[in-house]
Image (cartoon, rainbow, N blue to C red; front, top):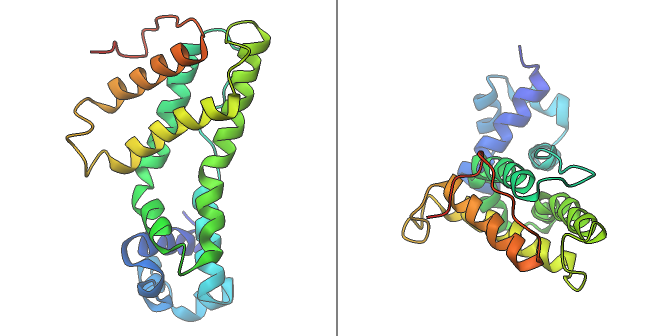
Length: 200
């Protein structure tokens, strides 16, 4: 059974994603978590502390890790991007709300920054390892390459359900295409994989 603290954090994230900062009252959050407000304050002290902790928890955790020694870049990047996409897509309402409120509530900007930063670091290092192996062009900027691929996955996860004309293919097909384009751009040989659907 989920403990009270975890229930409150999950409820706060859900209510915030739906109602925004103003609408995410302690009363609503307590009702969503099926506890009383006194319990909420006993655990977190204030609404601000609860919301910030809920956002921190939502941004924790990572997708499947890229290997220390690349062996099949297309397969490895497809699996990694698919896991990143799934995580982002699942939390898209929360991410959208944060981006919409970051000017009014700058304290939540840490969540907006943290969301993609660890993934960008991991992908940059992976590109560097490919360069060290001689499997990617030496003149490629790993930071720019990582931003390109993460940007495509992030935009797809945030927009797929509302901009259907831009994303006519399945997420699997789109992610396979992003990875193939990325590998071509950095000069890495793409190895066909059964897990990545063929590009149309």
